[in-house]
Length: 66
Image (tube, rainbow, N blue to C red; front, side, top):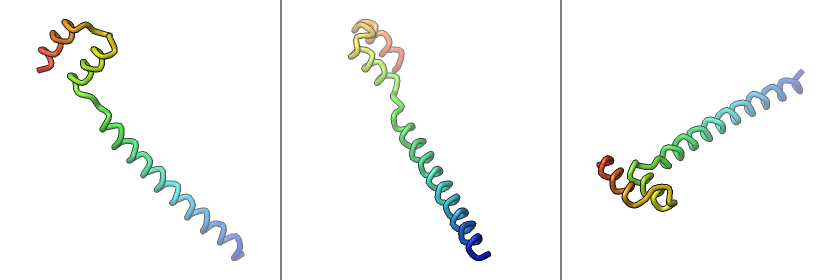
């Protein structure tokens, strides 16, 4: 009887450890995803650097971002 109770106690402890670990992981992901957001001006600069837009388009769109 005592042997089965020990397994149950270990199982419950393992459940809580996994639950807390998943919570911390989700919190970590949420915080890091928020840091990666770019401003509209930064997005324009990246698009210009990649050659997706010309310098004239960049200047026109930059005026709208202000």
